Image (tube, rainbow, N blue to C red; front, side):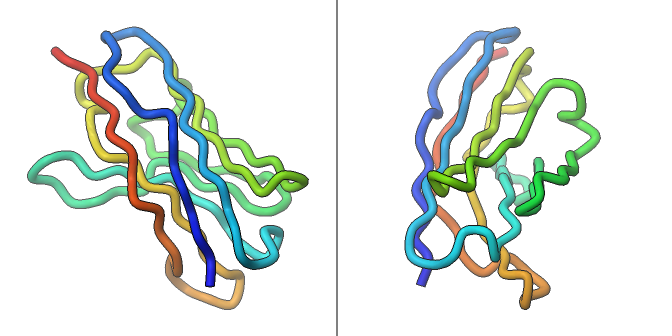
Length: 118
């Protein structure tokens, strides 16, 4: 069993920055692809960014150049640095873990709210 816990959300103004953190407990961190997803009110959950154990990354087009995902394999942490935040970034952000033996995300955190007023 894997436990994921996000932190770092909040209310910020457009153009500000936030860093989300996710702690990973319970299994071998290096065996998991890690992702940040978000869900805005009335919308489907979407993948924002993902990172492999070797730190290869991919991003949604809407956040490329503004968000950076990173991981600390020594401390079982994943981060999402969000710069130049926009009102459309308002959502609940979820950390998720996918085993390399799986074809979908297996574990999810409880989510952290990010609000950027228009």
